[in-house]
Image (tube, rainbow, N blue to C red; front, side, top):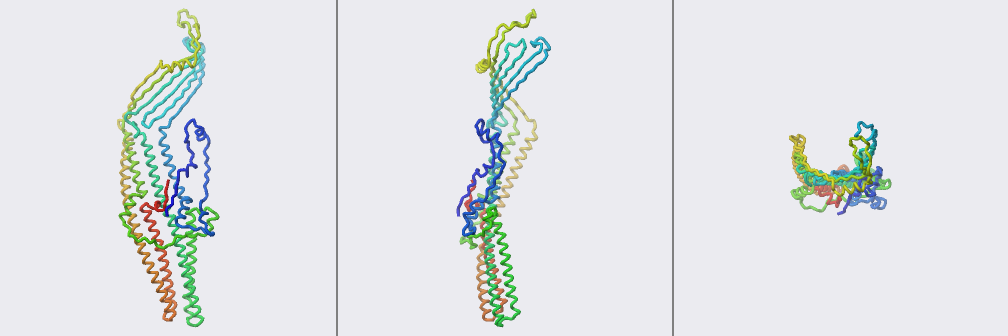
Length: 549
């Protein structure tokens, strides 16, 4: 009974709005500026019509679990829990996102002069600087910035040689951590922690799905048991009706005292009551089954009667279960144990991060800038001569932005800078506390792993014991039912021979009904306990062919 369920990330991608493209792709603008749709459309249940046969919803355990995995609302909610840790991985990459910046300002000023050196009685100027930069941090910790800046300035000052003056510069700056935050490992710690937490979320999801599938399968066996109980109670009613009918004939013939007719009548009334109660129990459990597979969401399907094809006949497998072997399986496959162990990986990364926080911060900085200047050049007479004459323009040399760029890329006016920056924490209480917390967290999680291991062993041993106990109970219940049937047959013969009263026949009927109910109950309990064993060993999803991708 192997089948597969594939839950791809596309299940929820359509519901998630994210900026996945980079500038300047057209999709970048669409994802950035178009408002996301907040409308949530919930699809109805699927594949229910595939199992409608003759006006009934006919389900084997396999087909039922297919519908559960496709339509169960709780399972769909749990599948969404992976999206948040998946987004955390994307968020952990944020420190390495490139950033482009641009700025432009235009400032015009008009001020009264305070001295002759300003070159005009009322000084007027226009300044228009612009700057473009691109910066990014690499996963090695290196930070670099590439920038270009240019400016245009005009003035009415008589002392200005370039008017308008065009200045440009191109620069590269970088900072390299030498101790703290140095290297790929340290700078990728947040990303590794996010990925580790995502794996933990996958284990948690698998553990939750195991519980949900187990609950859904138990709901299936609840209906099977209720249907079988109803059949047993109907058989008991038929026996009681037959006994009453026979007693009434004997009463009419005078072979039975009128005082003895009340016992068969009371027996039939009790049987009718039991049938009525069994019908109500079955209706309740069928409603619960419909909710598990989403049939309650379909107005047409939820009205159909349900026919389950699985029987309560106990499995034919009688091999003795090795408890230690089952324990080893559980220690290998249990998702809750894997989740607890995954916490230790996160703790190791947290300790490394806390250790990095204790280190002194020493970084190397370097920059290189090349400059250029252009514009219209005014050659003037000496403005500082002793005659006090006004400065005269001798020649005008035209120029522009090309001159500025020519000088800038001619690298004739470079600016170099190198430096070291040191931040030495004399005492860091915060970093020390972070390290202490990280060490305590790992010790706590290590103890938690041991606790889970102990609980896993206890769960599996109890589950194995319950399975073996149920097997023995089923065998004994079958033997008891056979004896109850023989007891009823014997009492009927005695009654026919006149050596027993009808009371003993009715008593034997009750014993048979109870014995048949015990067989049904113990057979279903065996199924439940085998299901519980698969859950405790972590094999349920694999055994049911459920694959999460």
